Amino acid sequence: MMELTKEQQAILDGEKGEVLAKVMKTLIRYGELFGATKMVPVTGAHNHLVTSFGLKALGPVYELMNQLIESGAVSQQTFSVDPRPLDKNVPSGFLADFVFKNFMYSRQDFYEEQLNKLGLMDKNAFSCTCYMDEMGNKPQKGDVLSWAESSAVVYANSVLGARCNRNSGIMDIFGSVAGYVPYFGLLTDEGRKASWIVEVRTTKKPEAQLLGSAIGMKVMEAVPYIRGLDKWLGNTLDDAACTYLKDMGAATASNGAVGLYHVDNLTPEALESGESLIADGAQVYVIDDAELQRVYDSYPVIWKNPDATPKLCFMGCPHMSLEQLKSWTDRVETALKEAGNKKVVIPTVFTAAPAVLEAFEKTPYAARLKATGVITSYICPLMYMNNPIAGKMPVITSSNKLRTYTTARYYTDDEILDQITRGGK
Image 1 (cartoon, rainbow, N blue to C red):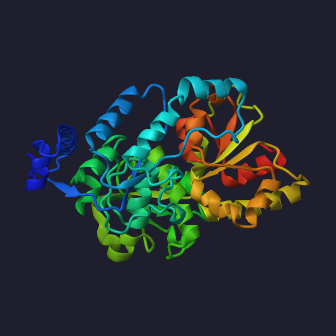
Image 2: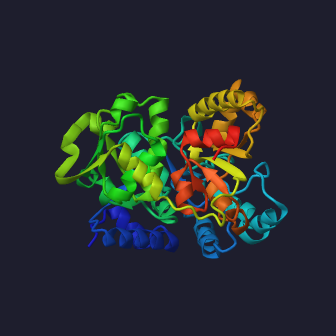
Image 3: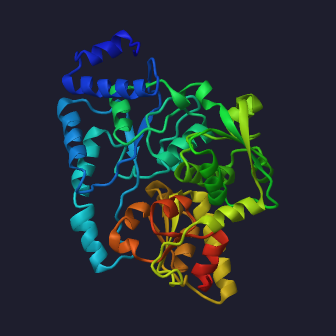
């Protein structure tokens, strides 16, 4: 049985309202399923919600949100939320637009009104990379969070040293509303120990998304301790290293169920505790060039015509950083010049958080990227691809998360660059 404080028991007993009591009861049952014996306070300054899309089918979610709003059981924190699903600047045909607006995200405006009433940080607080400096929702080391977005959870745990379990949607808002989450798993010291050692022995810097995919598919939900990656990233969490870990972590979380990884000599807990984070009996997984190639070759191609010419390219799942937008501007310009082309030959969309895009627009890079024909957007590529009309398109990406959840076809960054600037396959 869960041991509750007086305040927690009072909430459960209904002293702060029937709705909040139901929220607490749900959190307690959730925790007891995982062996939690107590609840701990949520300490992050802001929450982050995974459910950002106004799907017509989410009627029960809207009803639940209304109950929270009407009872006054609103979030104890302001919060950000995952990306919006629609943007008129992203290429789509008449039929796809009709499906988006009438059958899929027809309640988007209504749902965003609910989010505002519940405590949305601001009108632009829509991104899966809420932890970017520009977004204003970067947890501190040791913060206890109530998040659900898998790529954000693994980043917060691993790169920032915060503490959060891989929750489901709705449980994230419940934890924020109650102000408490059950204490188990990645909130505990024991739960943060590594049961896998990953030895990176590649001859060149491994592709972040490919490395993360390999790790995720091997260790699944376990915690890996990664050795040898600091050779390529250094021992400072600068913009380049954080960007790399963002993409690698997203792939570990989507191709497996990783919620935390440690990188030797780099991530906060690995710097503090080193190999004492490795549990007794940890298994070893060696990743060399051949293993990465094996993983790459294992990806299925589910296009109706595997030899089809790509119609669209998405980059930014999770959302791109300011560092990526700048570096990719340089790369696209150089590759176009070498190919003898002025603009990309495949419609290409780079997605990033609204605040990151605003910061990017203030730099000289923005006009340069626009001149290449690349489109920037704030949407979630995954939500776009969930449209059955869009899903039939031959779309390419270097995101393993997008590849996993949609019909998009994976290519490495270098291969994507070649395709969008030269049209090569």
